[in-house]
Image 1 (cartoon, rainbow, N blue to C red):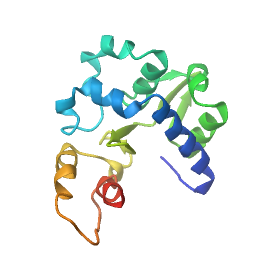
Image 2: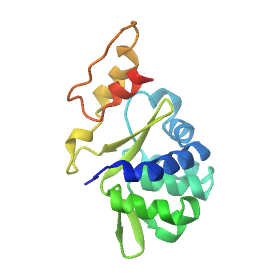
Image 3: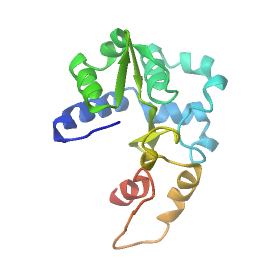
Image 4: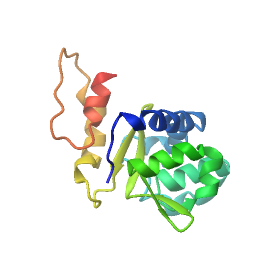
Length: 168
């Protein structure tokens, strides 16, 4: 379970910098094919169909996609070559990552990129269903802001995707 407080801000900011550096959002968009980018969050259901294409992005990007999209464990040493060891330690304390033997995995969380935003979401079967992004939310998100508004309330809609988009 993720237990967040301000002490983890630096780790989250550093992780976001790494995701931006490796163009995580663009890679996910490319792997899903552009027509599917707005249809379904995450990649967990696509993993079998793009293994060869994923390799073409390089080993660092492949590792990040495996860990944060496909929810596959990776070696701690390999992750610390991309993300600093102190950030990995903080993400373990935060609860975003878990460690078993020398393998790092997410605790059934994935990072869903959406138009330059990164949303931490469960896969829908994990402990915190409140952070789930469903396909319906993903389809509704681009439509909901087609009219101007002065205020917006995102109450109980899951991951906060609508609030994040409204704020931007």
